[in-house]
Length: 374
Length: 222
Image (cartoon, rainbow over all chains, first blue to last red; front, top):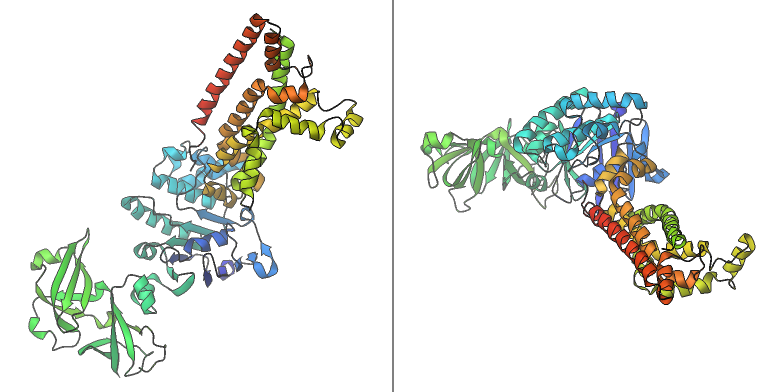
């Protein structure tokens, strides 16, 4: 499997700065996530041969598609790559079947139509062969685009924001279909998205990008809950990021001093006692209760607070609370939607928040070196 | 009705269209997709015949390919007659005067194809030639055809440059537009009237076709 892996190295100063190396094994779905201008789409275009970076190397298995140092630069039509464009870019004058058949040039003419039909079946569009793109819904167009991308029997499948142009319900269904595809076609699959939930749903690995550099690579769960730096935490929209000082290491725990409050976190080996650190906690790792108010502030990780805001979302409840104390830190959390109704909570309610030790992630503070002793 | 002049006009129109078809496709496509410094200058130069008086174009043709010029002499030595005041000279003049009519609509039609469509074709394994044949031409054909219809109609109506370069040799360079002028000079208004009406109807028909086509060009594909 490793032999069929995709390896990409890209470097350039501008106009879109790039300085990264990434790889994706066959069978893996790697999500490239980052803000606009982070270079996500340029990476896909460089792999497909639609963009030529100043310095770069792209190889799949034994084949080298691009190596600027050896002046190798295969044109797109020679690279066996399937690319699903953000707006699908279907050929408007062709039927769905002809769109897919157009990418089957490697097959004898008489087999193309049959194979195109099979691919449309695979993406659940078996009965819409004769429709033109304008007669298909967004979700159906996306499926034709996926079928066309697979038609070349690609060594790599690239998807550029493939779900951005379809509605929410269709999107949920397409997530599942993409996961099925990755099992049916064990090739490296790269998905560009700016949606972290989407990345977590479709990918088993995730690459967090900012201004052409990789900040962190790992499982979506790790990248989202255990960012490698404060910068990464901000990019993944982890709102609860604070500074603290390490008091001691105590068995399985790291004890932190957070502006006079004591915090227990799962042990973090990277930092010494006394070091100034940053810590973060995902909104799902914060618990809220109204019953044990007397225990607040007397036990580690439990603090009394006042609800500032409460927003009902479709499946959950977004709550922000202000902790007591002169620094008045604000914590954001997500709770089950029924929670507020059951407990009668609202803005101004006094509550106790409890921070799960295993949810507290300790990082190097901004402006501090990784081995800084504070 | 001067049928010799009429058929000469049709023949000149068709030959001009035949010469300008590949020119319109390749130059139009090149201008639509290529990015280079001086592109504006090239586009301006190709549009010149739209604004220059036909007599200016005719004058420069006479002084560059006339019988006394090197090009004219090579032509005469090779083909046994002068390039100016011949049908071939008329074709050359007509092609030059019609460059913007053939190229610009084709260029607009190629520009209307979304870049991702061409990129999608390339990543689908289509070679540049196949992309042109299977994707670009089927999407741009209305614009190309519009340019050719415009060229044909404009050739039928061209007067100044034809008079300058072709003179008025019956069967060789005397087109219907010149014939009308001749008939009016000879006070034969009846013949002039028939030919003028014929040109009017033909021009109206072609313009109708052009407007029909142009309502479909300009719409961005993809």
